[in-house]
Length: 271
Image 1: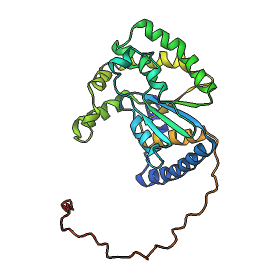
Image 2: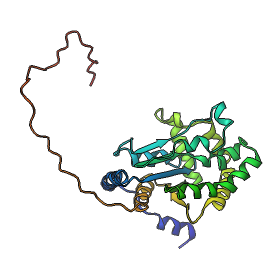
Image 3: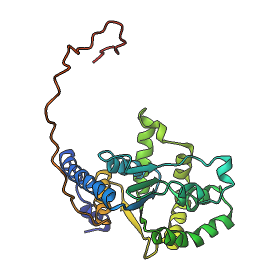
Image 4: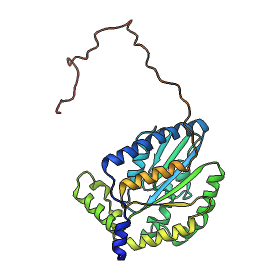
């Protein structure tokens, strides 16, 4: 068997929608259990999501958070720094979003912008970049020493799959907003970003804060594998909860409460 044939043979078959929905439902139930555990034990968790443009970071984050409380699972996706923030210590704008007890903070892009887009696009100086790589392991050691659980994911996709997803965004009016000028530039500078990734992983993959690589050409498998791994990183138990009972309605003040259209602004019923 040739090398290319073996590569195709090793590739797992695509999951059907039925299989995917069955597995994601199980994982969502486990995430709810984890939510109760994080609250009960006062855990502080940071999850960093980095990766190729169009690798599916947003999709994984959406599936993690769609069935849990946004007051516990908080997503941080910072915009371009303001003029004031540009004068601050680089990590300052990120630290202010760190979790308190009972919170999971998910960074959709993080301080690692400096090691990726800022390096490749020249948004920081060489000195700033080198200093970042030198001090980030120390910074992350401090995070962990502050009793914060830190988990870092890098979503990786192939050149061919990234191109397919970019073209899909161009064609789909629902997705065109996802294709920014920076995405187009990342497509052109594939190898520059590859080198930046390799240097970043070499400098910041430590025993206490390792990077976990998520192969993301298959979005469904990437989501399931990443969520399953995330759950495995935090030992938790299914805490006992009181059974919820609705009880009886109080009918003492019963009246005809059908809402009439008179004087009200109902939306048009088009469907």
